Image 1 (cartoon, helix red, strand yellow):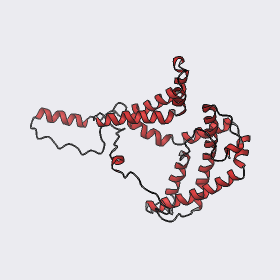
Image 2 (cartoon, helix red, strand yellow):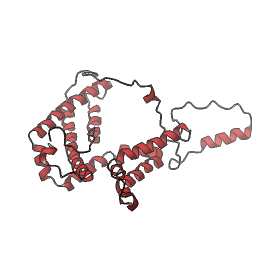
Image 3 (cartoon, one colour):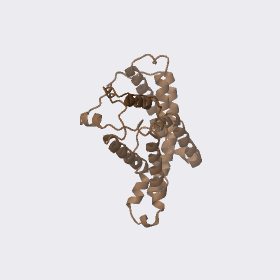
Image 4 (cartoon, helix red, strand yellow):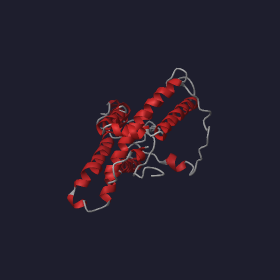
Length: 261
């Protein structure tokens, strides 16, 4: 392999960097600084961590680590990365519990169940639905939320409140006050979260070119670098697990140390 590892992967940002990013933004030196200063500190830590990761791969140490680390260790590490985000994810999922449950049900169906349905085994598309189960589940749930938002079923939380009624009907006024005073049950209220608005995407420019030093010169804080190196360590283990999982799902051979490096 000359370029890439030839596995069906979309290598992007990892959730293991969220914790280090939040920790960097709350450093005593940065907590009162504008967001540009925090971005510059994060960029500096990412630069150092990326260089360290490149050295590990260029020297072949990543492939050596993959040979001595068992799949069980990788699975536990990847699971801990996900569990570490449970606090933030659960709080947002609670805003619309049935929409979050829909994503989970679709994910389980596409990744575990659909390939075991006998009359669907002959279709090649089933293999790809299983391989891309996460993004397909998110797209389906997002489309449903967009339709319900456009239909007014899911209300816009930022919409301006309606003007007060001019009615003098005492009965109607009392009923309105009683309704307003009755707290909604967050477990059943499906209008409290999940609103989807595509207008920012429609109004955004088609092409926006990023450029170096867009937010200023990167800064290097030792504390930020240390926490990001921990994030990179978790990212390496997560990537190793992804390589083995992608190879198994796609029918490719077990990744060698050269492929991993």
